[in-house]
Length: 352
Image 1 (cartoon, helix red, strand yellow):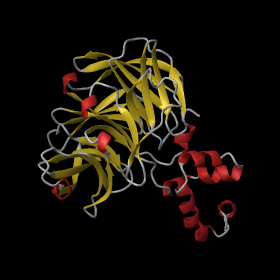
Image 2: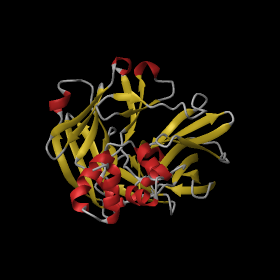
Image 3: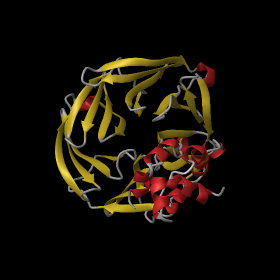
Image 4: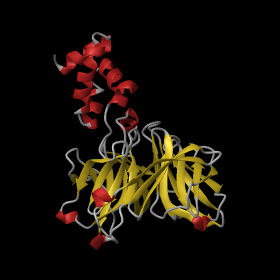
């Protein structure tokens, strides 16, 4: 049976249970760009590929990675992605005409935020669809810029530009792709601004920021309000926050021991110790400390940076599940940021 026949059967509801697994196997092997293109073939194909049930069955798209070499610390980060066979390859950004004249300042779920100093311009680039957009100029000088995009919930994105710092808060401008304009706001963190770290995570319209000595600052980008969540232990400077299976997680590695906490109740700052395990088995006796990079959004997997490679660790089975090695050219690479993003129609609709 051909793929088109399977799709026709699926759309009509004929032999759905028998053909579903085979159809998913076929679609799962297609790149997202092809899936997006096939949605234009007909209404039935569009309905099928846009089906949320089917999208949940498909695997995550490649992990996005920022990295730079140790000998190149003061130049702009390079962008890369992990291929399915475990080899890290460069992503081709030649389609974006201002790549050489701009600097990548942030990234979020396959979108990149570029900044061009002259003339002052922000660009948001979708590396999957090869689409990009220039943003109107913010009114004030930017001191920190953050890109917020959640392909699980919406094709819209936001850009946060912090323009001034206060003792316990900040002034900021927020660009919304929905309105196409910037709005000015003032925000109160509830703690000293100097306690805010650079470790952040965006999920479901909330920006989570780790803060010393033991807090998570949850910034609601709809209400422009902050809530404080107390961490279960003093903040580790290499700690990481992220979402997995619908819950906020906090993790760190200390003395070769990996500890992962899951937030059960934000209002009461109630956490549960979910995993505690040794990582010595795959880092050996290296003096360089491994770092948590990201959580798998749906599985019991955590991604860890071990020079000079990135590994995925199965927490339930306590074994390595994947490994991505840097080649000789990138042998002394420094990982900056990674993300995992779903096969989502919101991703293909963003900047469409």
